[in-house]
Length: 137
Image 1 (cartoon, rainbow, N blue to C red):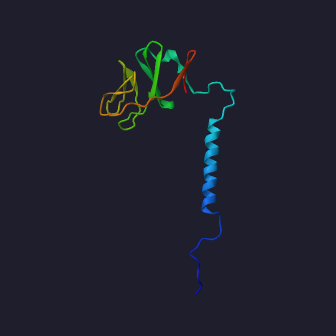
Image 2: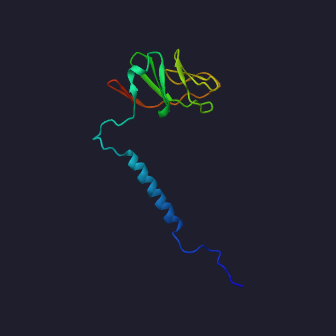
Image 3: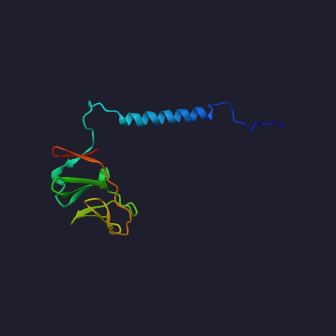
């Protein structure tokens, strides 16, 4: 009756595999931080400031952000993902960001909850206004 070893055959050590995986992850992360534009702003352009009405806002669904203009020339941005159950907010009116799924309302000025069932504010997003363009920072 032949005996078989319960030990795996020769191959890379676990430590070697883990080090290689870590190095690959670091390379991917650093590649995302690189810039070929000589230091110029490289944020994603969301759109012109004219698309965000004073006292209202606009949801940029593809980028996962809602931009508001609570007062003339003051732009704020928040995640468009409702903190209640993750639905996308769809509307900004009367100073409120509104989630259609369960009717949570958030302040267009600071993202705070104005009406539940959500209990946590919308997280702030970083934007810049350059000329007439709004960009994700």
